[in-house]
Image 1 (cartoon, rainbow, N blue to C red):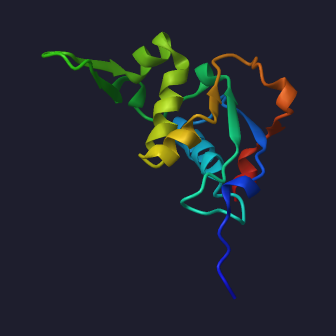
Image 2: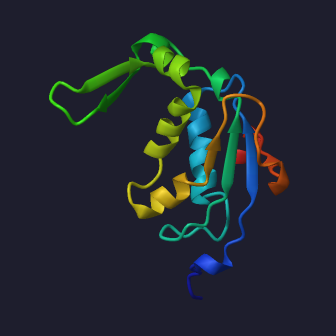
Length: 146
């Protein structure tokens, strides 16, 4: 029997909606990354973008465990001498609540052009409203992951 390998034109994409209200950042990022990569599908192929679109709402209501709210640091360098910028999780959430989720999910995707294509299918919104109602997203529950 031959091993099945998905072709890019054969992939059917769905839209999933995840409500981040009260969820832990890392666990949410794992769910989103698996959906974006397509690991929940039987036709998953590592070198083909078999993933689906993911909409995350209520990004401003995520939480982290322990002392990570003050101790977790996000680093960014501007490229200029002395241009290292450091922000805690709390500061990042006050500035833009969607950045923490985007950074967490992006770190779990492949660091190449395939990962960039998969990351572009992630849509994160701070509130409970999103402009993707026409795509009829399916509400994704945590229990479906296993």
